[in-house]
Each structure stands twice: as C-alpha cells, then as structure tokens.
Amino acid sequence: MNQSEGPSGFLAVDKPSGVTSFDVIRELRRIIHIMKLGHSGVLDKPATGLLVVGANKATRLFGLFSDFEKQYSADIWLGISTTTDDLTGELLEVRTGPAPDHAAVESALQYYTGTILQVPPAFSLVKKGGRELYRYALAGEEVEVAPKRVTIIESRLISYEQGLNPLEHIPPESRLLPVAAELPPLARVRVQLTCTGGVYVRSLARDVGADLGLGGALGFLMRTRIGPFNLAEAYPLGDIANAMAAGQSPAELMLPLASVASEDARLNLDGSQLVLVRNGQSIRRFKHHLPPAAAKRGDLVFGLNADHELAAILRVQGIDQHGLVELRPSMVLG
Image (cartoon, rainbow, N blue to C red; front, side, top):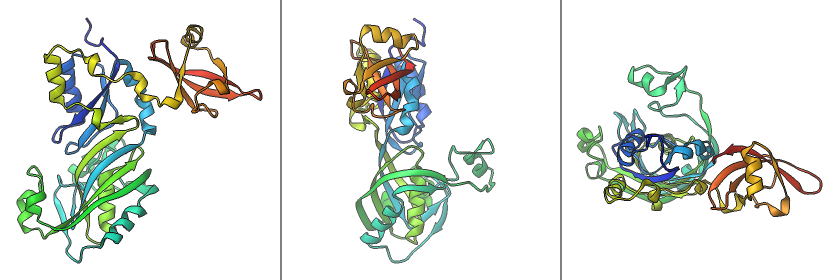
C-alpha cells in the first residue's frame, strides 16, 4: 500500500508541553504510517491541549477551521515582562507595587473582549516583509508591526492569587528559573478564553499586565476546544502508539469527516443528487426541506451520503421567490 493511502478523518491529539505541533505530526507519521497529515493550527511549544490532526481528505477541510471558535485555559503572571511575552523568554522588567484588586483584573480582561486590535508577539510566525517576526527578534532587529484585528468572545476570570513564590511556580525549563530566587512575589490570573482564530494569548497576557501597571507574561496555556472538537475526546501520543501496538487501526481512533459539520448544517443526499454534485452541478431543494443553517446566500450545507459520511460541501447560491434554494458544490470529497 502506498504510504499516502489510508483512512481519512480527524485525530484529536492531546499535545504535551515541550514539543512543537510539527513534532506531533512527525511522530504520528511514524506511529500510524500515514504520510498525508496536517494540523488545524499551531500550538506554541510550551502549550498543551487539543491539536486536531487531519489525515488524507481531512486536510482539505482545514479551511473551515478559521471560522471555528477556540477555547483556552491560561495563566497570566503579573509583575514581570519578557522578550517572548511568556515564561520561555528573557526577563525584560520586574515591577513591584500594590497588586490590583479582583475588580481591576476583571475590568482589564473585559477591556480586551470583543473585536480588538492586537499586536503579535515579537517571537511569532507572523510575517513582515516576507520574513517571520521571530527571525528579526533573534537577530536583535526591531521592526514595527501593524496590529491585527482579532475577536475575543469571552475572557472569564477563573481565579486570582497574589503573593506567589516564583521558585515554586516557574517551570524548570523556563529561562527565568536562574533568577527566580531574586524575583518578588507574583500574582497569577487564571482565565478561560473563548476567541476566533488569530488571537495570540501571549499578547493578551502582555497587554492586560501593562494595563494593570505591573507587566504580564503568559504561563500555563491549554487549548480545550476548536469548534466541535473537544480536549475530552483527544488521545495522548502514547495512547495512540499503544493502540497501534495492540493491533488497532488508525481509522478506529479517528473522528469522521462529518465531525466538522454541526447537526443543523447537515443534509442527507440521495443517489441522484450525489451524481449531480459529483459532476459539479447544483441541486435545488425547497427551503423547508433544508437544515436551519441554510438560511441565506453563502451559507454552507454539508451533504451526507447514505452511510452518513461527508460527501460534499455545498454553498447556498440563491433562494427564489418560491423558496426554492440552489445549492452549488463547493467541495466534493468522495
């Protein structure tokens, strides 16, 4: 069997800290022997949590993920600023002073809720002049970066602790560990963040800390949800390796292609409709026979075959005065 062949679907992986998202892909290729793999969005090396990996045809569906909501659990440390806006960077500044009260922290988080302008971290994959920002930072070159428009749906304060000893909380791999004994007590803000794609949680930590007058750096970060995919259904890499060694197939661990579609956007297609769609032709249905998500021009409908597998993605092209809806194929998967 050609190495690029095999089942199509999504693997929800629980990424550990200390490895890159591409490290996960490389390890999965070794474990499940499928070469055509991709992921839904980079998690920084220190971050943990949900990484959705697509195999074969699933990689074609990652364009849909930019519209999915994402959810994170994160720690913001107040009192320090770093070159990377998290605990992996070099210490830039230490600020001491009265810790803000609970209401001030909540107010700062709420200020960054909604559609905002956010400056990406200096150490990031965002490009300026065709070159990633982290390359400028490594070379010691300062560049002006235009802020990006991003949307933070909710920043919910989970806990707020003050007077924490850095030696007891800074991770051992952090560059701050050698100076931890010299740092004053810090405050830790734990938040649950819901946002759309493109948000840098490190930038949020930096900006919230600056607004509170103490500086801020991101500590723990865990992604818990991407659209319909949840961390609760994710496998650690070791569990995937053990399942393969026990004789399971990759398909047994995968979520189907239809997992990307909410229930109110799914449409069962009969044989004649599938033939039309596979030939690139539109199909027409009355609006009351369509899922609720097919409400207006441009909306997506996910066409399923008789086995409830995702066969095509259709787009509402138009609705006439009689309520007849034209659905034009946007992507055919089988």
